[in-house]
Image 1 (cartoon, one colour):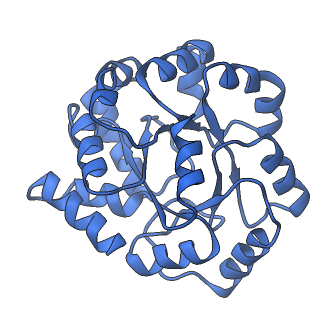
Image 2: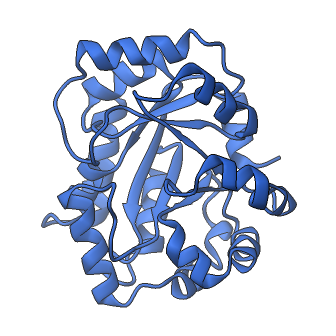
Length: 257
């Protein structure tokens, strides 16, 4: 069974998924960060594939992309770094990024490399659901990859049900119509959106992302969905002074305690 499917079968709520950019802050940071997150009780990890024009991301993740590319990170190198990761890490791993580098790498080659390195799912926000279902779904199924699709506050119920129908793993519920970043508490409008989706009886669970940066926001996400995704707030601590291992451990403990 795909590890994402197993996670959502075994754990119905309080799922914490952490995003970070591969190759940041250093080119060789990637596997150490993954191991430390797994040891610190993160439930799932989203490994960012650096891209030169990350349009959906705010300044913190944009900066991490710039640094990672400057450091020399590429998809080819990332797969090489991940080649032995399954000897040590058992939790679900996803790759998240933009479609252009994947197309340049070759999408069939990309899916094959994901399978060989033990990647369980992919998040490509700029891959239209219709294009995915018509052109790539059989390829993802061949390599047992979950393609995680996104919904937003502007997504109507009909579109959400269509996405739910072709989804596997979970649905990424974007909390607001803005870029990623550290924000305050959720607004009444956002909570109304969360309630609307939670009451639809979808076959896939949702994880809420964008703007979750502390324990309070994570708990709120868990109230209306299967859990939450933290990106910018985590990437920010990777750039801080001190022990990376200790910083990561304390961050995860602060969210989940």
